Image (tube, rainbow, N blue to C red; front, side, top):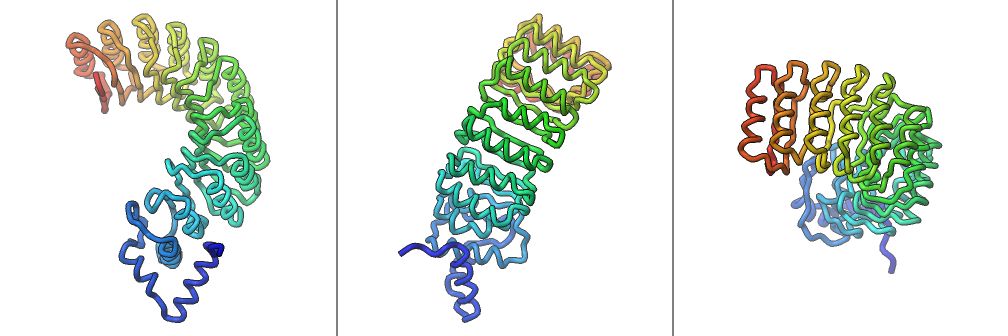
Length: 382
């Protein structure tokens, strides 16, 4: 016999409630804190008990703002039983729950009935597959959909999937503010097509480990030149933009309409030439960069020296810097930045360095300077 739908089960509990049969609901209430801090992770409940949990939560006075499956049971059976709660929640978190194509299809089918309520969807480490992406695309193109944040990191998103998702977003683009497609093979040309749409208001784009090349960076910069004013954060960690890609991105910093504040270039094989381009961008009076991640790049002493000159510019607005692979000579250059009365650095992350006592001593001199504005220093594994 087929299990009743979650909605029918909820209706059944309403009937039992009216008949003064509260046994199952009372049974689960001993586990459930009905507030936002409810956490049933590690508790083993039957499918009917999970349905009773859904009934209790839906009839609670507390607003259902965030649904995080990890606080219950990461099984798809639990997800299916709690779908009525999911539909009523503004933020839906499935991070690291490994929801399959079947589970994603059921989730999206449920969400289609009320797309205007959902503001955030996190499916990281799930596998929506062809059917899931198709249903998600239908939700995204619904004019009632007001989704602001979509996270599909490590979701086996292919170029075809990306084309479908972007096509849907381009038909209804104005609400989405954050998009994470990291650790997929999404066919970034489609994403850049979305960015150049004048109706696109995307503020945060994460494309870590997406096989982005210098040629892709050229397409990205071309798109941003068409619609430069919204993007605030760009994550290109673990890609290969090359010297040409970095130069295009840094030249864009000189456009007064471009308002990027956070740029992540961790493990991007940056060179001394790239440092010169970054320094030039930081020195521009139109640069708006506040945070820069250059960890795990072999910048060499000469590259660090070039970059330090940009950091000391009176036009530089950088407040947070992540850096590693520093030598003793590099520490001297960095200390001179900290001692500069024009430096705006507030946070410095130097994890995974082997600075030796001499390097630490040089940095300490910069930290003692009356001009140093640093508030946070993370030595990590220095």
